[in-house]
Figure 1 (tube, rainbow, N blue to C red):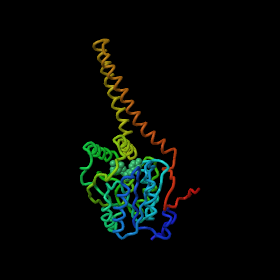
Figure 2: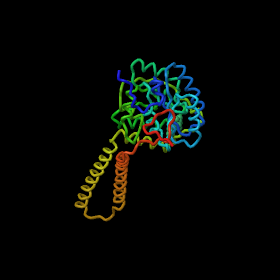
Figure 3: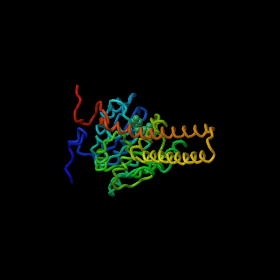
Figure 4: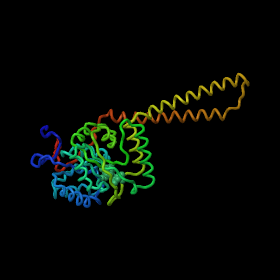
Length: 334
Ligand code: UDP
Ligand code: MG
């Protein structure tokens, strides 16, 4: 066994408490309504497992009473650790930061709204002990989703799994157990465009699945509207595939070929039938079609160029405002 990794920006009490077996990571953005219910259920279940644990809460720039409730929770139970972001950075980044701060031998990200039933953690741990490095929950059905969301999810997984080199399991979320070495591998991927499900799949390792029914959110509202989901899907596709760029090339080639064929046809017709002036309609169609295709192709290139620009700036993924129970490299003190 390698010696315990003290360098990890882990909990301040790590030295006295030792490395916990289980770290649970909860990203949260304006979740004041669910927090009391969440802690009640989560703590009860974790206590009943009889394992040492920590709960790393990442407050993703909430503007409600989330920070206040988290402080109270930490004071009550110092295994609840808190990282406050300086603003909202999005769930994927909040999850990344949470994973960075964990020190447990196994790590489970979970949604704050209890849509990922914590009861499943016991089964996760069992599979992990059997030797699986990743154990993820697979939704049996999507009854709690709207028809539109179900349809778009189905299409999305179809498209991304066609285009991406690594298969991304359908009907899974971020809810899974990961061994420390998986967390470490994911933590080394520092790209700005963070499609976590894809990053988890990319690192590989031996995995097992556990089916479960996803309940409704216990309280509060979803933070993902369709526009945000659409952008999330674009991030997923551009982050894991360059096939759209190739498709852009094919579109160009096909239109060029069609233009050559049409050109030959026009020359032959002129040679055989002589010059005829009418042709406005065909001209307009050709101009508009090619113009439109050019814009589509430019748009696809633009998507990748924009992401390249984001990566090139090499900004840190997140900015921490304060923390409770987590030792940061540079402690901000006033
Ligand atoms: N979340 C976050 N930052 C955001 C949006 C969401 O940390 O910018 C958290 C949110 O608090 C919750 C989880 O991500 O714990 C999933 O969000 P939500 O339940 O709104 O998504 P849905 O289940 O509807 O897809
Ligand atoms: Mg939810």
